[in-house]
Image (cartoon, rainbow, N blue to C red; front, top):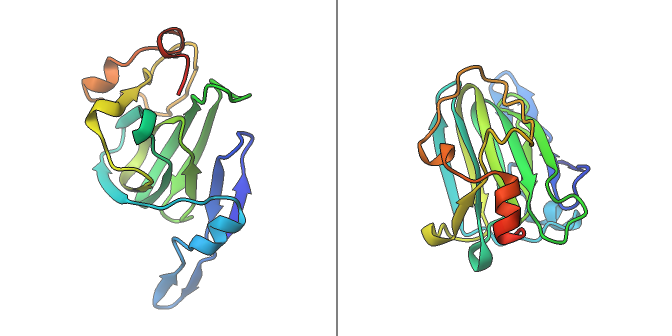
Length: 182
């Protein structure tokens, strides 16, 4: 398993070692001791899975306060453009965006610490899986507008399929003025 730091502190891309033969493949999708060696120390309490059609955009979502979540995200089937936005108040990279294509053939994953908004666009029909360090808590849910023009995110989809809720989140500028970060 390779655990590579990204330009944003605390955010890691993880690529497992895949063993393939005529029967198929095998890899470790989670190994606590390897993550701990890289400084990732999380107790995972919830695991979620979603199916999304090509062209769907989900996000940018977060949980705030005592219900903030770290996530370990991957794609079981298909391909997505995974997008994270640093919202940590005291971070030197506050407002920075990081994107990576998560691909079921590559089996890569992304570790997202607390304090980030997260979303993804679906490049191929996809089954998305993510472990969470805290339970979902509706009252702690928040988001940033996926299409915030100042963020200049290229979601790589022409006509996104969106939830109503994802079209109503505030821009990063409004969120920063109102909350100052996470």
